[in-house]
Image (cartoon, rainbow, N blue to C red; front, side, top):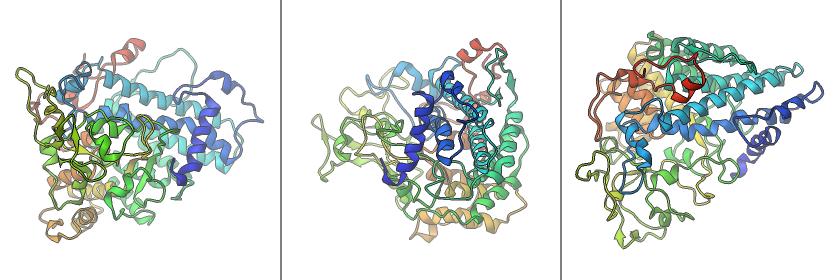
Length: 519
């Protein structure tokens, strides 16, 4: 556990003590114990009551991460002999052949709507407490969290049920159009801005602030044309400028420092993060997904990683050798923690970024019987493996939104036509990010001629690997149907820009309407 985050973790865990072991479902008997005398009054009580809303957020880096990432061009999870077949679910994600019954589609849906239900239930308790400034701020924070959860669900599934109250009745919600959900998200964020804290400190770390709301608004408006058919570029710049001009944030000098196992409130760049702890706030297992078994010796881990997720060659090859961000990748000769060449099962471990050789007759199995196929693909260690992990869980906090994204959103919106910014403004914003990546290579910095939308798309790929942005970016830039490793282009399948409503949800609620194309 990170010492600087002890207080926050204790508060979040206290929420579980109030509401039972589950972070998405509650025990009605616990709620029935609340009376006018026992509703939250102190800051500590408010944090404890709202804890389940924040513990639910950990699923963002689990089921939701899988949904948004596994079908994008940044990663492939091939079958490696007997490893990672998993019923073909990763193959389906890669080839965009998921269905309403797909496990990843179902799990992400269940996570998101359980989290939304948690928000509604906590709000129903808070609204009955005595009036106070603390109450108003806490309500605003939970509504902002609910808006974030709804944004994630709307981005992934499009037309979804919109429920804003906790109701134990039997009436089931119907499907709400994506544009209406978008309107709800932005109105909730805008209406609660003034009540959110402007502070950036340990006290607000892991909770939504005014600046997170502005950043999320910028992101929603950046994709408004996709969600509603109407572009709102000026709104992107307006909200991005609010974050930038606050003076609360600056780029981390060392790009990778903000993702280390001891990351936290001290970093100047993250605007909103999800706290994890290897023993008491579990759920960050990314290191296991990406590392080769032998990397146990590299990072002094206490178990073998799972050797699965790796970069597609075309994506890895976007990174130039001079780019500081290339340090997030493991490739070539690997070494143990003492600097000696890494040996595993008698084989010298050399990661081949381009070594995806399909077995005869297969479209997704790259083998692994002789360990050759298991060495294919560069491995992303942006989130540095935590040698103090406990089982499958690491302690790195997960960054959801940071200043670099705000800067690149501003630049993109101006290039796309925002009238409240100039080309010079876009160039300045984009080069803040670019100069960190190429600090001693000014010839690599953007110029007015080189800063194009294609350049922004590439820069976002370089900057935000494994930060749950790529699918949304590919859709906004018209790349989602393009060909990629193993997968042919599918230009006619634009309906797959949103995922299907799961079959289980449709079976349980006849008022829901399947998304177009999945009937």
